[in-house]
Amino acid sequence: MMLHTVNKSPFMSNNLDSCLRVAKKGSAILLIEDGIFAALKGTALTDKVSAANADTQIYVLGPDLAARGYGEDAVIEGVKVVDYAGFVDLAVEHDKVQSWV
Amino acid sequence: MSEKKFLYVNRKAPYGTVYALESLEVVLIGAAFEQDVSMVFIDDGVYQLKKGQNTEGVEMKNFSPTYRALEMYDVEKLYVDKESMDARGLTTDDLLVDVEVMNADQIADLMESQDVVLTF
Image (cartoon, rainbow over all chains, first blue to last red; front, side):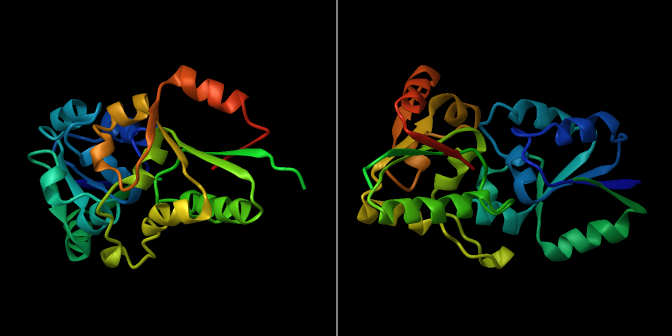
């Protein structure tokens, strides 16, 4: 299965939409850099991301959340927070990485 | 040089790109020339003002305290776009400086009233 990474804000680009459209059920999506805004509760996109998380496990990079002023408590239920070591683990566990840059 | 009205339009989140930091630097330069400076935060630009930014983990400079220092440079007119705040679930309580919330019509008028508009 594939690991997808998204590093652009979902409010400013359609990269996340493209990723969600193409990602196979059972694959993983890691939100990094400005992509982390998709992982937050209480936004106009929360319901969409929460629904997508049922088919594809979504992860978010903790240091990028913290840099932008958000803690784990701000993250949508079911979305998993990982650190850099977790990022490496995800890259190793999946046979390919697709970066939606 | 006569005083001109400068508006800086900020539309990008901090750290993912360099725009937010570059905008701040230009604002401070403009302020040093005693121009009439306003800043408006639209779209992901509102994230620049989010409280609690901690960049230790990403090993980048946390420049968010600079927004609190702007008033020392007589940069006191800070505006945020209501629609952008609402879409991101943000309220003024989430922001690290006092701002005036504006709707799209008010922002349009603000832009019209300026001599120079610079967007980052």
